[in-house]
Length: 334
Image 1 (cartoon, rainbow, N blue to C red):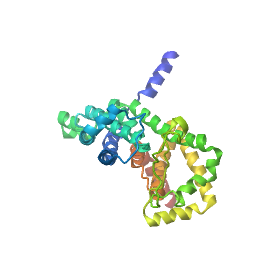
Image 2: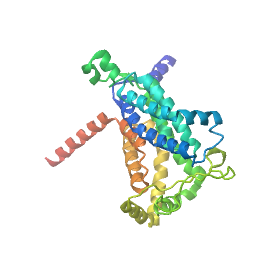
Image 3: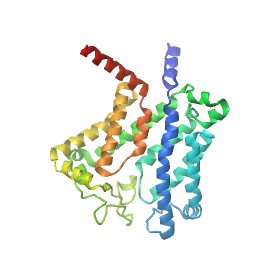
Image 4: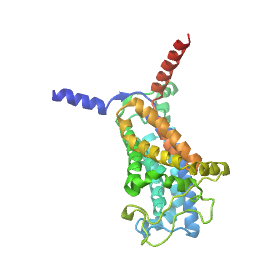
């Protein structure tokens, strides 16, 4: 009996699949994350040329500061180079490992300025998993060089423990976002006032002074010792039509309460996507729409999250269900 259960557990954790999810993450998530590398790189150049930003001395020591000051251009363009190599799959695992290391250093610098980039945080964790995950060398130049073009087109089956770990990271990311709202906002977060603040225009970066990181003393903390000193979020949307649309939505108190409750249910409901494929599919597609709406209202695209969710969708399952649905519809009309 114990042997049967052990075999079942092994099958659950190390099932072999031939879906292109892992190689898609390697290709597209790496390419999208390069955008953040260039953004942070531009910020580093501006910082070291004029030092107009405040950094947290507890995070950036003198040694690290001197290292970044001297070699920041090498780090930036090295990350770009190895990111491209990882994406096309040339020495895929090694290139990905170097890219994750360099990207982490840049992300670390960004954090020291009081800015926690949620996109980069999840992206780095997933890319780190991909370094070791089976199947990452599918659809790569490594396989093309070794086996030829025809072999490159097909997916070599691989153990899906890496995929399960990625799903776990995504679930934790969304779930803890919901927990954080309860932890720091309590039941009052559901009254719609928080979302109303961001959509009403009061938090807009178009205004002067803009919402931004506040370089003040450590006496003013954000979330106590768990957060970064004095950081305030803001609305980055600059298109007038979207700003006015946000204000119109924010003027409806009932809508704001509904959206607040729906957001919390959505984030806390992420835990169930680990166990049921239909729910996971619906959740991931809903997450794409969720982040698209954030882009419309706040100008925060969360493109990394959208790429992650789209890559994790089992599109073969979706196409099968859609085919059955259209067959059923056709049978009803004949």
